Length: 367
Image 1 (cartoon, rainbow, N blue to C red):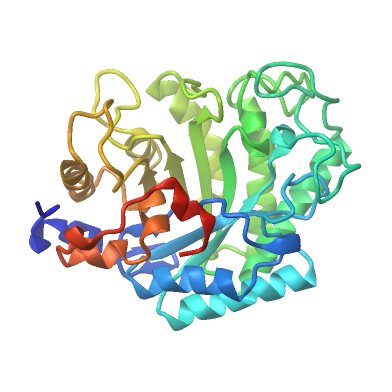
Image 2 (cartoon, rainbow, N blue to C red):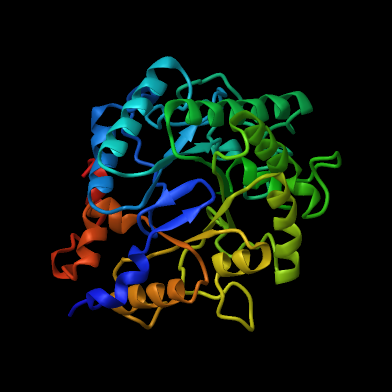
């Protein structure tokens, strides 16, 4: 069975210009942690991994999470840094290879916050940080960040954005989703601060707003800034920052004002409505409320699952139909592209019988 005739998938392969970001098609490689950068330094194998996707029709690559310059930004020494001469030289080579292949690429800047286990490498003595010293389960796990610590983190994100521009990346994405540090400030369960970084949903955006503003100042008016956000958190898949469209509009407004160009709206299943009474997903609502371009994501290209009555082929068709209706602008593909670097061209050319399916053993190397 073919996923679609070539003509019907054309919306996925239409070029688009989003501010200064000119893309050959609507397919995005979603950020996926790989942990193949020993001592935080991405090597030639990482560059080749991303180049393969650019060579095979991915319009925009968002790198795996890359950690900012803070001792507790990660608990995994094999996750790539986005600071230090060796790591930045490694990323410069990645950019060069992707651009040689005709692709576009942005790094995802990341701090994991309180999800980092205490006494983790690479900095065993660094305490994990969080808005209120509370973990994702609502339990006390440290002390609240001081305003001086907050200022240091904001500066580190801005330095990362400046480095992204200097190295020749095509933009930058800030990881504000899934219960990591920026999202820990968004979420009332982990942010119980009583100062200007806490309070209601709008007040809890201040940390992200100041990061975005600092990044904008560092890169200038034309360098694209993408913000990834989500309702769900790791281990709390039913969590909601915004329970209604009205709350979502209130949440998004200060982020737009701060300078976000594109919202990367992370959901676990792109076809699920975000709020009752409308078929729009999170990316659809975000575009409707802000007018900003959006990226949708969530199980695209995977085998069908019991929670969804449509098979894999119908899921791709549904994605294309929503894109053609202008519900969102770009579609991020995660595990399907991790498993098969040629996913995009095979879908384009109707060669879905040649697709390499995702299985967990595909995580063991950089295909």
